[in-house]
Every structure is written in C-alpha cells, then in structure tokens.
Length: 401
Image (cartoon, rainbow, N blue to C red; front, side, top):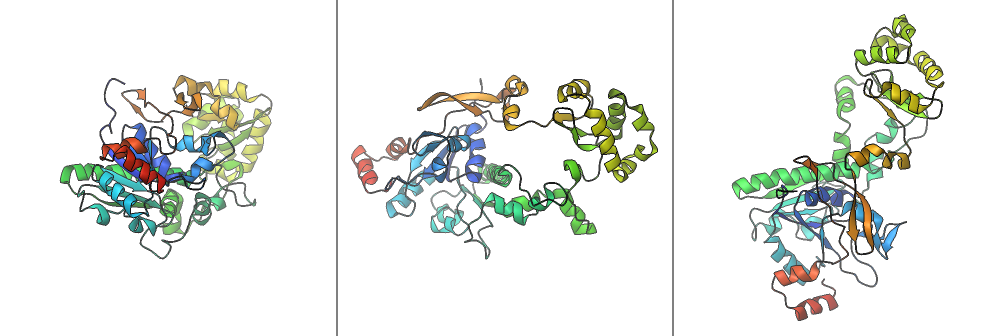
C-alpha cells in the first residue's frame, strides 16, 4: 500500500482475552494502529490469553490456531496488572497511548486501573473502551458471560431453526463478533472526539446489549404491535416469499424474491409462467398465504436438476446462493478472486493461511502479520520505557512480566 494506513501512529493498549475483545481490536490493528496486547505472564505453565490454549489445532504448546484467528497484526506484552510494579509499568505505557481497551468482567476494569478515572491524571485525552458481558454499572457486573448465553437470553435460539424444533443457536459466536466490532466503533468515535477536544472518556458496550440491539425490526414490531416473530419453515423470511431454502436434485439453494420483480424474473427463467399466472401466487401476500403449496411446487421443479444448473440459470438475475458446507464456502473461487484468502509467516509455520480483512483502503486489502507469540514484544516495550536488561530480567523472575 502506497499510503500510510488510516490508524498509523495510534497506540492502543488492550487487556483482552478469548474472542470478543480481540476480534474488535484486530480490526484496529489491521487498519494500522499499534495494538499492544497485555497478557498475564506465564506462571507454572499457565499464562497469556486463554485463547492460546483453545484446541484442537496448535502451532506449538499454548499457541493455537484459534488464537491466530483473532490476533493478527498485534504486539504482545506480558504484564501482571494486579502487581504494584505491573501497574506502574502499565501507567507509563498508558501515558504514551491513545486508547485502552479491555473485555474483562464488568467489575474488573476499575480494580485493574483500566478506566478513564484511573488514567486521566496521566493522560487526559485517553479513551478507555470496555466490553463486558452485562455492563459495569449494574447488579450483573460480576457475572461471567459468554456468547451462547446471550443468544439464549436475547431470543436468538427461539428464532433459529424449524418451527416446532428444539432451540438452536447460530453456528458461530456471532454476538462476540458483533460486540467486538461495536467496541471498536465506540473507541474510534471517542478517539476522534479526544483528538479534537483533548479530553478522553469511557466507552462501554456489553454482549447482552449488543445481542438485543441486533433484534432490530422484530424488536420494534413486538414493542409497538405485540407481534412476536416466529420461526419459519425452510429458514424463510417472515414477510416475503419465496425467500427461503429450495431443494434441488443434489443439494439446497437459497432464493430471495424480496421484490415483486424477482418473482417475475424467477418464473420466466425457470420456465414456469403458470406460477406467475396462478392466483394463489399473484402477490406477495397471496404467496405468503399459500407458502406451503408454493414450496412443494418449487421443490418438485428444482428437484429435477442439480444446484449447478440452477445457479447457471439464475445467478445475477435473481438473488440466489448455494447452501455450502464449510469447506465449500472456504474453497469458493470467488474468495480467491476478491482477495479474501491470504497468508502470513508465523515462526512455526511459513505461509499460515488466514482470512483477509473485509475492509479495503483505496481498493486494497489491508496487510496482515501473524499473531504474536506470548510476550514477544515485552523486552522492546520495557526498553522503550527506559528499563535496563537486568531490570527486565528481575521483573520476569518475579512474575511481573
């Protein structure tokens, strides 16, 4: 890339672990910020972000591929934030930083000195971004919480799956990823204001609030009209049809006729003008009223040919996609063509395959570096603060770093 990345020159300290916080700060690191990941020192075999130990696939002991997925482009500093000397080092670093992020349990940021109140005396412009399970200022602040719990409490499991079936969560930790992204949005917004005014602040988001916010229009329907959105057969859209799964000869397609024009195009391209003329399917309301009959007719027709046939016929004319297995999704040639596949060189694996950032600057994908080994940047950062090699050795021996 010919120009500096948008966040080049910004330093962000992040006391983070597992998925939600690291996912959010990885976007900032990919956009050019110096993200310094603060991790517990290795003591008695343990230490570091808990994600480093998440299996089943490892590059070395306690260096997992799971960790690599969330920590590209970052630096790693081991530091015991509960120790007095650890706090002193942290405050020295915070004086040089533009922001501090964390995804600790709600009651811990104040205890660990990660708040604006704790840091404004040394850096009035610092932004402190907090991601917790339930927030920092309520009766649940001390509660541990995870993505799946939020999907359950926010109604996702009741909305997902076939009518009458068991509750189903989404296949990914989507609430973690949404909340991490929202944290980075809040941090950047506050950072812009701090650059303008010279005054920082605390910015909070939490998993449950983010999960509930994503209920969006079903929430507004219910709050205003008492209309409780239900599961639909074939993962169909609640108000438009056909906008659902359709069974082909050798697999499944998702077809979305959200607009009347797409229904007309569909019936023409599959050579079924009789469906367009059928009064049961004349309007979207008619099709909704007769969804089951329409589904049976579409299944009978699409079941005569394989998925590839229908994609060749419909792609680019009607919103359509194949229902891929995970492997098929990742081996999609389109991802290669658009640059979503990339690789980084890790000390334990040259050419480690990773996903590119979905963000482009001037048409180019953002550059990636491998996730750091635990404490890879500790010595360099402490030396920057003026610590001599013998002092660093002492701090390491005492478990501070």
